[in-house]
Structure formats: C-alpha cells, structure tokens
Image (cartoon, rainbow, N blue to C red; front, side):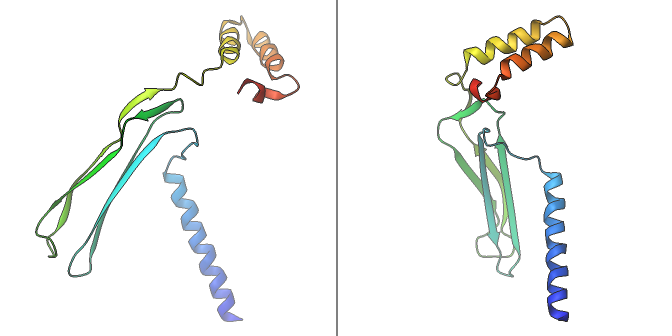
Length: 138
C-alpha cells in the first residue's frame, strides 16, 4: 500500500510541474501559423546541448513558401567541445489570409464600431447572434 501512495504523490507532483510550466508559455491557437525547429548535440562525455525555437503569426496570417531550419555548430564533431552556435528558422513570407474574409461579419463589425453607445452596440451583438449564435458568421 505504501508504494501505491508514493506513486500517486509522485504523479501529482509531476502533473503539478507540467501545469506550472504551461503558465509560462502562451497557448497556441489552432488558427495560428507557426514554424519551429530544434538542434541537439550529444557530446562524447554524455552531456547534451539542445536549442529550440518557434515563430508564430497572429490569427488570419500564414507563411508563404518553404520553411528552412538551419543549425550551425562549433567545435570538432564527436568531441566534448562541440556546441550549437546558432539556430536559424526561416518560415517564408508572412502573408495575410484574404480568402476567408466574411463580408457579413465585416459589415456587422463596422456597424458595432459605428454605434453611438453601449446599448446600441449590445443590440447589434444580440441581433447578429440570432438563434444560431455567431457560428452562422463563420
């Protein structure tokens, strides 16, 4: 019984650390384009050097072209002085998505921006939501 209790405590501790790690990183959105890369060097003495990076665009944009990830190494290969000098991530040209623009949603957003006061804005929002909600504007 003692082993199960220790196992559960250890699992809760690991889950807590994983949860705390998520507080430091901004969550990625499914609609965001991203490009990432990494490089790892394992030295002869068993030590490991790892570098990673990620570039993320805001929603409504994408990368145009091929993504190229290029690590550069220093030191002699298969020795204890090998290291990673740079990691270059070239994802292509950031480009705005223009094919997914909904003219109805654009018109509703313009009307809400032009509304004179908060009650007019809330009326427009309720009317645009309708019985199917805002999913009809997607």
